[in-house]
Every structure is written in C-alpha cells, then in structure tokens.
Image 1 (cartoon, one colour):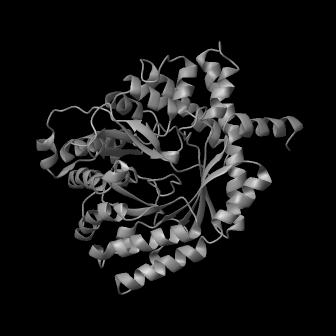
Image 2 (image 1 turned 120 degrees about the vertical axis):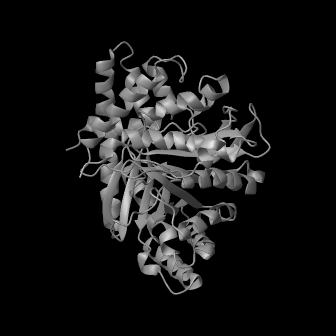
Image 3 (image 1 turned 90 degrees about the vertical axis):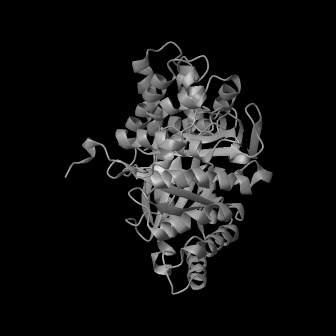
Length: 451
C-alpha cells in the first residue's frame, strides 16, 4: 500500500533526481523464421518483428503517462542472427537490413541481436558471419551487434578475439564520417547473458520464451541525492542507504515490467538493476563515487567505492523484484557519463584504472575512444584482458571500444544523444601481436569444473 509520502517521494525522484525506466526491451525468438533462402528468411524476420513488437512504443508511452515515470528507450532484441543464417552466412546482411527496416517502422531506438556465440570455438558459418558485421553496422542505423568470445566454462576463444580486434577497426573505418559510430554499436563479451535489455549487447537467448519483456531501471541521480542527505555517515550506513534506494527504484521497474508484459501479450522476463548513466548533469555514476568521498573518479579508492556501490545496488534490488537478471550493477561508460567524461579529460581515468574497476562492476570497458591508428592486435589484446577478468571471476565483462579514424590522444569523438562524447584516450604502445597471433584458446580456469 502506497502512502502519501511514497507518492510524493516518487514524484520528487522523477522531477529532480532523474529517476526513469531506462529501457523496455522486447525479446523475440527468430527460430521460426528460418527458410530455404536468405531472401525468404529476411522477409519472415521482418514480418515477425513488425507483428510482435508493433505496440511496444505505444504501450511504453501509455505506461509512462499513467505512472508518471519516464520510459526513455523502447528496444527489441532477437535470437543471435548467426544461428538464423547458418545455411547462408555470406548473405546475413539481408537479415540485418530487414531487422533495421523493422526497427525504423516500429519507431524503436535500437535493435540488438546481430550476434554470434563463439566462446568455445568458431564454426565456419560464424567466421563468415562475423566478417559481415562491419559493413552491416555501417549501412544500418538502429541495428546493434555483439559477439561472445569466452566464458568461465569454456575459456577464451583467441581466434574470435583476434577477429574482433579486426572487426572493431573495420567497423570504425567504414563509419569514419561519424567518428567511428559503427564500433559504438558493437560489443565483445565474455559470459554474455541471454536476457540483457541494454544495448548494444542485447540478444534474445535460445533458452527464452518466444516473446519476453525485459526492463532496465536506472537512477544514479536518485542514489546520489540519497547520499547527499547523509554527508557524514560512515560507509556502513552509506551502503544501507544505497540498498534502500535501489529497492525503491527496482519496485518501480517491477511494476512497469509486469504491466508492460501483460499489455504486450508477452512473458515478464527480468528487471535489470543496472545504474545506467547518461551525459546529462545529475545522472552520473561517477558523481555517486565522488559523493562517497573520491575527489575525482579514478583516484585511489575508486575501485573500493564502486565495489560497495555495486554490491549495495544488487542487495537492495534483488529483494524488490521476483526476477532480477540481465547485467544488474553499475555501468561506467566513458562517453555516456558526464562525470566519467570530465575525469577522462583530466587524465584521472585511464584504461588501466577502468580495467581495475571492471573487476567489481557490470560489463567493462564501455564506450571508450582510442586513437584511430591503434593496431587491431592491440584492440584484441584489450578484449582478451577484459575477457580474462570475466572468465576468472565468473562475471560478465565486455568491450565497446572506438578506434576513432583520424583521431589522436586529446581529440574528441561526439556521437550525440545517449551515446554522448568522449576524449580519445591513450593506449600502451607496446606490441601484443605475437600473443594474439598465437591463436588457440586460453583454457577455462580450474574452478569452472563443477559437474
């Protein structure tokens, strides 16, 4: 039962503290769309997505009006396309184009799932599919792509890691006129999850129902404002405040998710607890860490503060929803968080520090711009480092990195909107090519054997 105080508190969170539902994402199975040819399959894919998701924008807008909580993004995720086009991988772009056309017709923000799962080894059809990714991302607007290159159970597929280094480079090169936007719609994962509502890494897992609604809540501004009320509290009490705040935020997400699923004739999937920032002032995860006592995010103590934040968010959120899933933690994308942008401009945040922070937060090196002449093998080595953190620590890690064409350290890329802007950050100039070109795989850790 909501009290008058609860209602007023929620209104204040929305109006002054940037509380929102960051995304409603409908997951769709495309397995029934496989036909004898690429052309027929693409047509079936387009028809299914347009039919099943035709009301997602309308429903989200209605719920936003009824509950008074902004729903920022309306998205769709689909079965990894490499599975749908396995019989004709060279023509996978036809399905990619059909998905992008469907996304445009529906008026959604992004559609994820132009993806491949190659965490143990790379089948020939998947190798050919990955080679289509740069061109497809360069010729579509809303389509997003991801590749899972490793897992705790299988180890790291180093051939796939090498291919992804080359894929990021080519995707950026083909979209040089937009600062390498193609690479900003591409993610390399370790331990990818099948119910992630956030882009660019969302896809609909084969273990999911035909139609599912997943919701990603957000509210870094709400958490920061809560901490501002207890400026002299010890860290135990600060963690308790974050837990209580995460509970309230997640309850709002649960309410919207269940009602959205009902109206869209879909199963309720999960609520993702992730604190997802935007470039707007007052909506920053970095600002939470600074409120806890770090002068500038990236300074000593940042990893400890982030660990506490992430854990408290999970503890509070998991009690507020019957189904918590996705990534569920705190995102630290450089270009999408005004605090991270400022820290990177100061030099307080480096790739090395971001890698350390990855050990205790969601995902990993996210929306990071590096010099355009960075070798593909160096990008592959960065991916391998992140995948190793995920593999050993049994968590999801990822890389979304933009080798900005023609840009050098100190320059800036600007994607606008939710993707924001980012200073070009330096990478180590030592050569990692021998490691990457060895190929093979990095074996799974001993603790992966649990049968």
